[in-house]
Length: 116
Image (tube, rainbow, N blue to C red; front, side):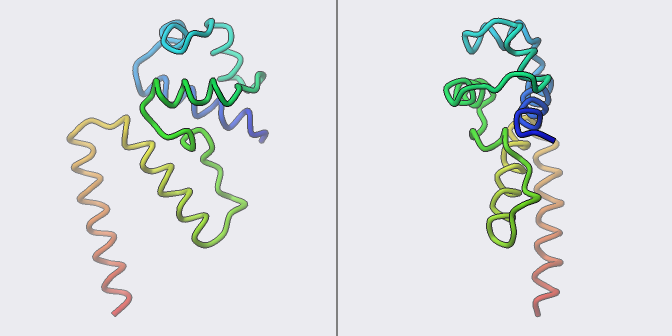
């Protein structure tokens, strides 16, 4: 899969999670709906300025558009996964965030137990 396709999938996911149409997103970032469609389909490479505008529109870090960590190892892979998880939580409601916190707390406790 090409990087522009991965970015496009992330844009589409974040747009849908935000409840926006392509037209609404285009208005927010100053692009036309055709550009949004092309980005989401992976046929157009968005500029860094567009990535920044999208990140601001979704209130996520720019790294949220680059979740593929398959080529990374160790700490870099972990950091990338944490960054992706952080970006995902921006689209969650309060109940889901509380649920995620309970799950994460349980996983941490299990991990701590395994270390001892």
